[in-house]
Length: 245
Image (cartoon, rainbow, N blue to C red; front, side, top):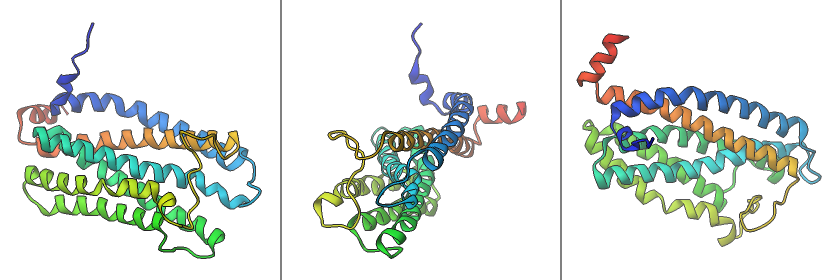
C-alpha cells in the first residue's frame, strides 16, 4: 500500500506525524550521545601530538558539521517556501535556525578551548574561525529579521532572502583551509581520502555526529509543532485539539 506523503505537507497532518516521530529521535539521540561520549572520552587512545586535549574534537567537529549542514537545510526549506509559497516549509526553516545557531556557537566555543592549548590563544582571526563566526551572525540575523516583522508571511520571505544570500558562506568555511594559509588544521575526515585518525577515534566522532543529527531532528520537530500551533491558533483543527486536551 503506497503512502501519500504529500498529505503531510499540510500543518495538521505534519503536526500529528511529528508528534509520533519525536520520541523515536529523542531516545535514539540519548543512546548515541552516551555511546559516542563514552568512546570519545574513555575508549579512544590518547593522541601522540595533542595528548588528552584533542578529545574536545568529539564535540567540536560534529558541532561544526551540523552548523553548516543545518544552514543549508534551513536555506533549502526557506527557498521552497519562497518559491512555492508553502507555509510548512517556511515554518520548518524558522524552526531550524535556533538549533543551527546553537551548534555554531558550540563549535566556536569548543574551538576556543581546543585552540588555547594548541595555539596559545583563545581566538585568532583565522579564515575558518572568522567565516564560522559570520555563520553565527547569519543565523542570528535570520532570527532577528523574522522577529522584527509582525506579519509571518512577510517575515518568512525576508528570512528566506537572507538565508539564501548567506549560503555563499558555507563553501568559504569548508574550503578556507585550502584557499588560505590558516592556523586551523585541514579536514580530518574526507570522502576522497582515507581517514587520518585511528578507527576508534573515527567511530566515536561519527557516532557523535549521528547523535547530533537525531537530536536536531527531534528538537526541530518539537519547535515546528509549536510554530504550527502559534500560527494556526485561529483554525478549527487547533481549537478541536485544545478542546480534546
